[in-house]
Structure formats: C-alpha cells, structure tokens
Length: 143
Image 1 (cartoon, one colour):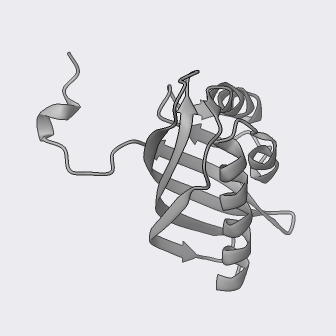
Image 2 (cartoon, rainbow, N blue to C red; image 1 turned 120 degrees about the vertical axis):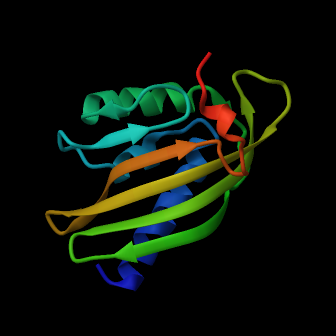
C-alpha cells in the first residue's frame, strides 16, 4: 500500500464514519475484514473478535446514534507497510446519543489497523475510547 492508497482507503473510512454517526453502519461494515481475527474495541463494551461479534457491536453502537454531523479527523500518526498500515486520529463530531433530543459533542481517540486481504485493504482492528485529554493516574482505578 502506498501513501496514496492509504489516503484513498482512509477517505472511504471517514465517509463511512460520517454515515455511522447518522445511525447507518452499512458503509463502515463493508470496510472491515471478515476473517476470524478481526477485532473492534469501542467505548461501549468489551472488545469484539470475529466478524459476527464485530458486526453485532457495530449495529448496537450505530443504533444509539442519530443525526450526526460530519466528523472532523485530526491525524496524529500513521504508517504504511507492505501488508499492514495504521492510523491514529482524534475523531470529533456531534450526534444525538441514546435518543437524546439534542446533539452532543463526541470526541474519540482512535487507532485503526488496515491489512491487505486478497488485493484489497480491509480494517483489521479499530480501537476507540473517549480519552482525548490528560487524566490523573487515579482515573484508571476501578471502584
């Protein structure tokens, strides 16, 4: 994958995420690997592994979002290898969350790993969490 190939798949991914925050997971699901080692770690639950779990996790998450605005993406880092690539971004948008009447701001720290599968780039792993600013060490303690 060249830098321009990475740019193309990331552009598709970003458009799919815009649909996702409007409650439509279909474009995003098309970009994910269907192999057994595909994983998704979103901020709503434990990591999902395998296509069936990943798909169910996406469906559940997108069903709780509506009327999302286009997402802004702040690239922190990225790298392209011969069959793997990654990006680290901050995603910022607004959407109605969980049936709320008004949109709320959403900011996520996201790492996405892409893998070349049968000549096409697919998302192998996505990890998203809401940590976008410094937190005290005590914030990791579970009570």
